[in-house]
Image (cartoon, rainbow, N blue to C red; front, top):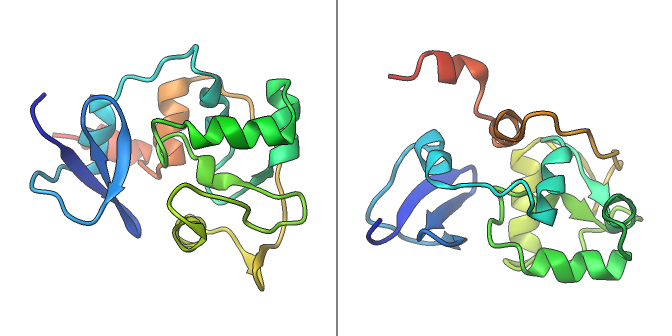
Length: 158
């Protein structure tokens, strides 16, 4: 694939260059979100696949994610900084145990905007509640649900 391909996801524009997803301000070649996702090959061996277990509209703590991955909460932060598929593998859905946002490669404002777009409730500067990780039975199906690409859209795809 030559050049970048982009798609809008709520408040951000995602760019795919064949190796990684980035958030960009501008892009010359836009596609629909489903077409964008179809370009990305997820590796089931990627330890960050576990992020798909955070349902859209919810968040988990670094501590909860660390326990699921068998690493410390601090190690979770280091792993998330290396996420080559941000938003697609939703690292923005990981917050501090007290509900504060914590870090994000694109900044706290973008993290908050993404979470609000997905329906996460805020109580002031913190999220109102934490969730648990869900089991992932079907990586592709869970990915599509995570991005809000409904089954009706797949059935009616032309």
